[in-house]
Length: 133
Image 1 (cartoon, one colour):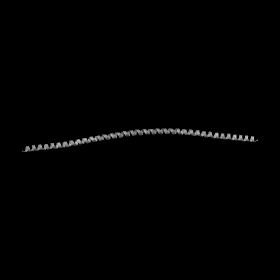
Image 2: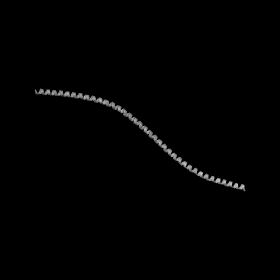
Image 3: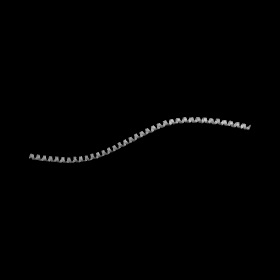
Image 4: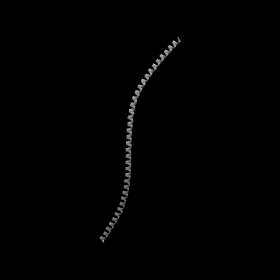
């Protein structure tokens, strides 16, 4: 009798174990299906996000290329402005030299003209004295 009772309890325990395992397998299957759906959704979202990141990186790269081009242009303008400044400095030095030479010539011509005027005045004075005598 105890053997039959033991076998009955063992059978009942085995049936409960099988039902528990089936219940566990059913829930694990549901969890796997949910996980697959989540992964598919996440994969789609990640693909679209990855495409957006790629486009953003390309835009940033294009903007960086534009900044490099602008920087290069600014360097060229700065170099041209520097060269223009140097050329203006050279022209200013030439104008100073020319101005000094012109001033010297003016002083020299002024002195010569005074001499010529004095000579003409003296000659006219002599001629005038000679005519009135």
